[in-house]
Amino acid sequence: MNDAQLAELGEAHPELAALRADALAAVAVAGDTVALEEARVRYLGRKSRLTEILRSISTLPAEQRPVVGKLGNLVRVELEQLVDAREAELAKAALAESLAHERIDVTLPGQPFPRGHEHLVTQTIREIEDIFIGLGYAVAEGPEVELDYYNFTALNTPEGHPARSSNDTFFVKPLSPDIPSGPGGTYPVLLRTHTSPVQVRVMESQRPPVYVICPGKVYRRDSDATHTPMFTQVEGLVVDEGVTLADLKGTIHQFAREFFGPDRQIRVRPHFFPFTEPSIEIDVNCELCGGAGCRSCKYSGWLEIMGAGMVDPALYGFVDYDPEVVTGFAFGGGIERIAMLKYSIPDLRLFYDNDVRFLRQF
Image 1: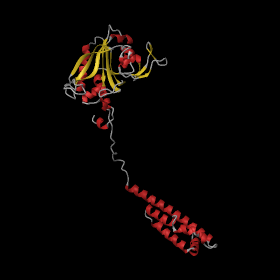
Image 2 (image 1 turned 90 degrees about the horizontal axis):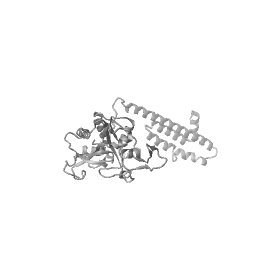
Image 3 (image 1 turned 120 degrees about the horizontal axis):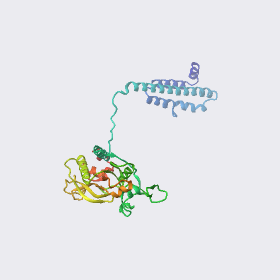
Image 4 (image 1 turned 90 degrees about the vertical axis):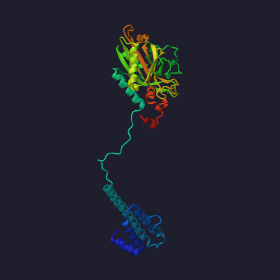
């Protein structure tokens, strides 16, 4: 307000002039936003004296109403502008103080963030791969959604074999004309039950010699302490001239000695698989009970780690290999089962419970 307006205010409404002076002083001395808000409510709020004066203008004599109304509104606008200006000053001062006393030293190291690590299953795969790469093997991979041809037919599995039923295998699509054809016909699509189909695909793509291992996820309708519907498997295949069962036993023994340690005992016993002849199973002594017998090993003292055998000559007909020239062996086992035996884990399902307390141990 200018001098003329102030003089007119003092003459027309002394109380309003005094109220203005008090408000100006209160806003000017407000040291923080809390004090400033208190001053705003006291002098500009709905229950303030200024608001009461403006509401009572209608009760004044007619000749005073225009003057008091004009001057009262000028006081209100002036105080609102003053409050806004003071609020900006306080905010600027607060920012300056914050910058002066709360600076961040960007040269200091940051707060450490907990880092994860590879899952135990992945660690086991890497370790197995390292062992076999050291023995001269290559690592091969293939599709998890597979044709029945590669999963069963090309592996010499007969039509009536239990594994080919929906009770044991997850079929994605049944046999129908719209499914891609495999060699020699049209086949159902399924989730592979082992990584052996990768071996067939490798033999289709290259001539002997073949030295490969095939790690990857496989799917079967099993669920208990030692089986899960999805698990990880590693299989190996050797096809070359002059390969014998002695080479297979020596390979498995070397793997077991490097993976489990030189003191771990292994056992070889006869078995049957459609794609190997003769076939064997390889066991290691149960670390959980020291061979005395427990629930995990079904009280036998031994746990199977893999099946193996000499490649059945009938398989060579599917990949155009000459069984009179080459022989070979194959082996395969569950990664989780192998890790259980090495680290004395009692239940396969612990690998997939995602309990960080368990996973951090490895």
